[in-house]
Image 1 (cartoon, rainbow over the protein chains, first blue to last red):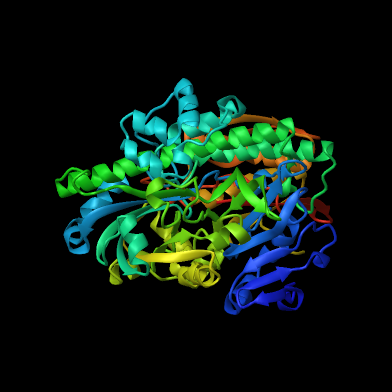
Image 2: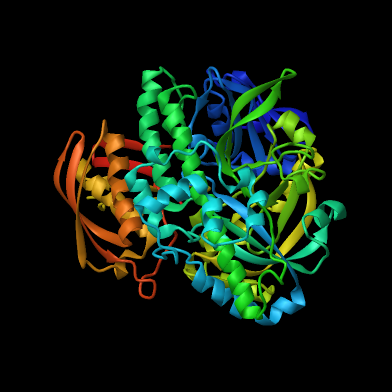
Length: 486
Length: 142
């Protein structure tokens, strides 16, 4: 049964909706959802808003249980959910990060124009499809053993660069420098490491992708210029992947730990997937150390993928990647929990920020963003669906004040995988994309329907809501030329 | 007499995919849930039984055992690249099981593959017994 959410939610203004604490007994704070009226109609059809209420049960939650406009029904947290918990009484919840720890997006720029790439596009996609294994059963080119993996878990992208996969200057353009502090490989199980070993440097399946895109609109020329995005027609590459089996197993392992811990600390929650433990407890600290290690694995994974993308461009175009200007614009995590400093009632305090399908969006001047972006704000990568477009935005002061420096992470699904397949029965998705000038290489072409435009919200509406709400500002829009999928 | 309900059905969820499995016994329902999970990853008709793996897991309760069972199968899938299609329960008791899983390594040319399953969630996890047998419901992260 669908609830009449518009009756339950209080409209704060055009783009902000509040879910009052009175909605469900046990909510410690109200919920707040960023959405347009039109989006709210779609949103009300699944259980996402119910999940916003459930997150508000977490002990020590501060402010609001927040949801970005790309919110949709997840497990435990809604996807698109943000929650801050305080250091003293607050908890950390693996469900607030998800199984794919540090799933995220990296953007690499090029100095190439669309017309220079177009004649080589098929060869380029073939090369990337060979070098970056995607889908089930694909194993990576780099072999690491059980000793080496511990170095990956501590060093993250830095480990990869030291091994020769990438450039030293890549590191400053990755959230947390590509190696988050506090990672403890001894807190990651042997099984998680075994699952990670064959998968380092692989893309995965589902919504993960590699896309060659072309800039088709610039909204903020100055910010774009600082990012190395100079003009319409310029080619960039989007990489979307995460921590693969290592992260999935780490989350699975700690959900069990947290289920026991939640009983031990007498934490009662409406959904088992929200199981959590106090930040100060040994269970909470162990999870954070393991989760951070898995996040570093994901940074290393995207670093390796970016390396092979550069190599593929170099080989196919017959020029060195350095000469093609293939710098990292930025790399952001969108499934993560981190200790950060934020202002609560005018006082700066340490909070654990859970971002489940949400992206950090720090403003200009923030000390945690690279010096080159200090004047414009942190770049935020927002991929859309493979048939339309993606965006690059920047964080704002308003995000700091309202959303713990967070914004959306993508388009957000609208149809289930089966509903999408039913809707597109008899449609050759690859061919339809080809007619729009988008070339696809997929391990599994039959499953492309699950990822077609129809399955997703329009990402332009998502970024517009946050742009208009002052949370993140649009910088540029890109459309896909070529797509690699699992 | 009504027709036998299918061993499993796929449930719709916006982001992920659920499996609703049934069985005369709870052990059967667990086996059918595993079949349902692998049916998301591959068209099971094309999977041969060239390999087998013994599985033994234990947990604190039935939902925990279901998660442990499916996770163990995913582990073999990730580490050894195996896809399973048939499961024989050898010992099934509160809250432990021993079973044998039959299948073969992924063949990217021959198999009709779907998306990989990342993990087993506890969200909307249900196990209950009705007049027609057992029913288990589980949501998988894709």
